[in-house]
Image 1: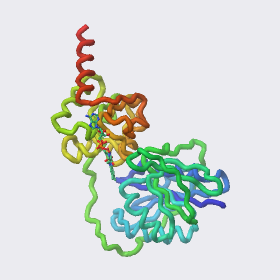
Image 2: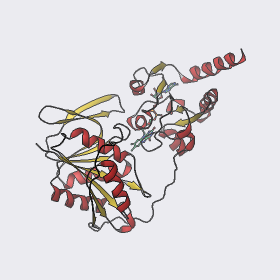
Image 3: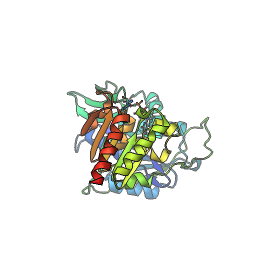
Image 4: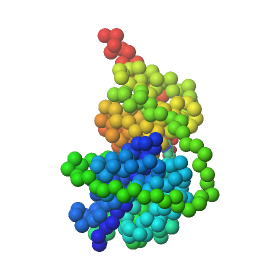
Length: 327
Ligand SMILES: Cc1cc2nc3c(=O)[nH]c(=O)nc-3n(C[C@H](O)[C@H](O)[C@H](O)COP(=O)(O)OP(=O)(O)OC[C@H]3O[C@@H](n4cnc5c(N)ncnc54)[C@H](O)[C@@H]3O)c2cc1C
């Protein structure tokens, strides 16, 4: 069967969100070379330049739809516009990134289109007469492989799991600019503002020491700060629960809703390894994890696995370092 795949790109403040390029890689991986078609879609406001950029870097035709409404994302409008477009186009697969926005409208879009919806997709494979999909479940402890019987599939990629698309040989596609404000929505957008900038400390650090809920008490975070001083060009980061508790700044959060980091060394201390955290750090050069649970999912992604209590192990590391420094 010839596949016709649509990739929905997402933009914010005039820039393409990086996970969109990963969704394109997923579409390329599930397509069959020359016979299948991949169409790129962009919604928002003042799209011409962005659409040109996508058609150039993505090497495929782009349909850019001006949605009005100040360019604000609105789930009802998006679902209505996209349903009309995809019915007209007769697509078989729809790929989009699992950002907060993507996860918000993908299931509703699938319901409207009578399609299957797979979120958290980390890989695709040939499952014989159909495509197979891979995703992690139960906080990354189990990997699930599944296939879809429905004629149309909405695939939501897990950020950080597919490589961002890049092909220097691809020829530029065309741009088709349209206007469609979709159906009236019960939701009114008032304002969208970025409250959290990506931490330059994390982006610039060669070594990141990262804390998780295994620290149990805020006072124990002194340990991670002391450990950080052992290394030069290092920064302290953490999992989302510590940021939600206010023990760390949101700019220090690593993961799908935090920063995507790729230091030379990532030290994960008392972090279980939930898929949302892994997405943000799996591209680190070398990963060392400390956890009391030998079955913690973080160990599946680590180069060195230390099964120890961090409250005894980290002071021992610091003490040993101090002794070595004194020699
Ligand atoms: C939409 C969405 C987005 C999300 N985005 C993010 C994100 O961007 N980043 C993120 O991190 N999370 C994110 N999460 C949350 C994520 O699902 C996990 O809940 C979170 O990552 C778990 O944090 P943790 O590993 O610190 O805590 P836990 O899962 O509670 O793990 C604590 C770990 O510490 C270990 N431990 C306990 N005591 C000790 C000890 N004394 N010594 C050593 N180890 C010990 C335990 O064995 C356990 O493995 C998101 C969730 C959702 C639903």
